[in-house]
Image (spheres, rainbow, N blue to C red):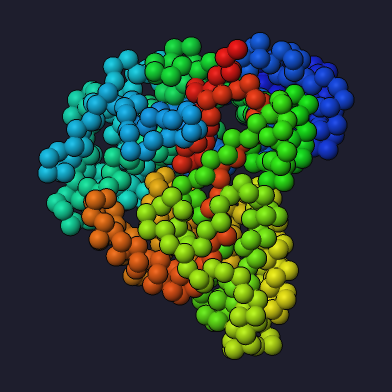
Length: 557
């Protein structure tokens, strides 16, 4: 795989390649060049020939953090989900552009068996499944992948009741088993034990491929895997030129049931949202990611384009506050901020209807959704709360950091900033590239931030586990509450059909803590939005917000 600073070294440098590099590195120039001239593609063909070569060109805002499925959190997950396979997957509803999480089917697993006493799950591998290098996928690779995920993303493994490598058993060349403890124990099987191996990050890796480049200081081969993915999925990474492009190529020997139609996916790195849309309208790209919401208006009337917009289950965009840091250590200030947020204006002016207004930290399609009066704009109440706080007349200024990838969140922050100024609170806004934003979240945390996460399951308590559990890597505001920690972990072992217990846990987490202590405010339930040419179909929303290209097809004529 090429990761040079120039183009693929297998290509001789040409005037076309040089012009292309310059154009893409300067986004303003790229947009003008795309409209005014024929665009040079890696294949040397003109834009009009894209469909003939069964190539899709996709404009994305930036490079992924890396390509190791356990070490990428955003767009890199999409690449992983196309390069790797998981043990199980789900059926899809193409008419609704979404997955069916309650209808799991085998992917690498031909079958699986849950022991009657829930002491184990045994996976039988499909015969003929291979990695991209032609080697068979074996149960040894599966057990190694179990162990690697436990080591690198133990927080996720723990959600499935996996805490020790001793729980993994290599039965034979095509059979692997996960063993669980008795009900009530830490290692008991949970409601997520099977679904954990459906998620994009739960990719099965080649033990030989990883260990061939592991080192004593990097025993799980993270550095190597970040740039050298090799899975059993329908695509391989042909090249990655940072800041410019990533090329995926369909495998000729792919064993799976859904065969790719498009044999080449060309990601183009275009940081500017306007430039991405301009390239789409000019026909130079086929799909645009992360469109700014104002760009979506009017697309429905464009005969050549369409918006695929699907409500993202439990994708609650929330503003969280570190309740130990001034001025958020005063509950009256926290409530004042919550009451000052212009919720309706955010819906109307920043996401333009491509999101859902909610009055709870729970998605509208989630169990137990109910509206809380707390999440209503009331400027008078907000002013009174500030006046009654210990910071009355001298509220410390603070800074809200927003990743540049989400312009709608930046716009929401501007509206919130103006509203807070009206009640005597000074909030500054700082924008960071997503990778820098995420790196700080992991190391330094934030006193206040706007964030969400892509919950792999439509479960509000599971969302709270990732957003607010004291040990969660996505808890960016250092929230620490032992009762919430215990309740979210306990929910994993409660059967879905036990409505009473689940409702009680949900009340503890939301009514008593997150809402009751005014820890956060839900701005809206996000939608998964993609803009594409109208003649492409097969878009499926997955909970990790990735697009699986094997499903895409040209519209039948």
